[in-house]
View (spheres, rainbow, N blue to C red):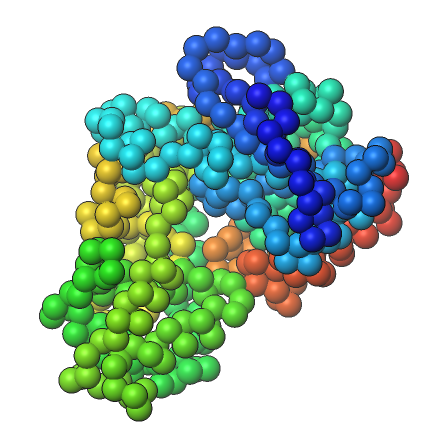
Amino acid sequence: MGLLDEYYLPGLHVQEHAIDVPLDWAGHVPGQGFNGPSTTLFYRVVDAPEKIHAELPLLIFLQGGPGGAGPRPLSPQSDGWIAEAIKHFRVVLPDQRGTGRSARVDSNTIGAMDAAEGAHYLKHFLADSIVRDFEHLRRTQFAGSRWVSLGQSYGGFLTLTYLSLFPDALTASFTTGGIPHVPADATEVYEHTFPRMERKTEQFYARYPQDRARLAVLADRLAADPLPLPNGDPLTVERLQTIGSSFGMKPSFERVHWLLDEAFAAGDGSASASSPISDEFLRGVESATASHPLYWPLQEFIYANGELERPIDWAAQRVRDTMPRFSTGARPLLLTGEAVFPWMFEQEKQLKPFRGAVETMMQDTRFGVIYDEGQLARNAVPLRAAVYFDDMYVDSSLSLDTLSRIGNACAWVTNEFEHDGVHGATVFRRLFDEACANGDLQAMF
């Protein structure tokens, strides 16, 4: 398909491209021809307008998620790492397969399949396929030039897959809030992150004590009589709890506080058991808890590496069931973050079509290999990782344990930032400067 479009944003030159990739990489090699069903990989290349004719090295951004499309920058400053990166690189922003403009997968796609077909199809949208897409892109569209990777959140998981499968493709790698535990175990992840969810809720209540009462009244009323959200989904206590999903980022405490500030139609802001729940609040909850098409369906399968000893079987729900303080009837009400539960596929319109496929995958034990522990131990590619000490989503102790067993890896541990720190002006610049000072990028600059 080649070049689709070319234009300027404030401070950025943008080119849009798309290529075909195999839907199923089995039996195919990145960079070579293929036959059989295909899908589309869409990507943008952005650079500074004054450098469009410069011979710059490449940096590929590995987006968080799962199911996350690449950034849509408004300007270099709208996403802090981009402002720094375009000083040194041409930046490649792919939409991972099934997201954005890469043959987007949604409820309409899965709704036409039965459970077994849907499960088989969704397996093609995990890290082993995503990384092979990117490697095919590098070999066919960039003449096989080695590139630097920057992986945010789930993009760090993809980084370790890339280092496992195609280490020769990479000159250096950076990750921000995205080093998974290897060996991967979804249950272990939630055993570490549920206590963090509890601490985040306690910190929220300590900062905004009036919201403890507001959430208690809301939960009591919804337990007795769930309300319809504007899209028709029921607002249950379980869904109310998921407004804590953003508590690992800034300024999420403030966003949730202002959401609760207008929860009741009475203008005094009190948690009134008799005041109607406001339409503004219902619209806000729907927006704050909206499901992205592949994010929840794939959430627990990002921890599936090869042949599993046991099915994942709703790991977050199993861990939650051992912690009564997270029950819908407990007070104060604890909020949840980045954890997928079976009820979501029963209550949410966008997720209902995925239910059979996800249930089938939850009992499966055969997945693609995404990490090679031996290769990671032998790794020679410089890897610099920002590890956020208080990260609610990716436990820092598990990240550091993994990094201790990866060759040529260096961690910067900080509690100055939350999970989304890369979007500011500091995190990537520090990692880049450290890499330059250490000679990691000597061959490029």
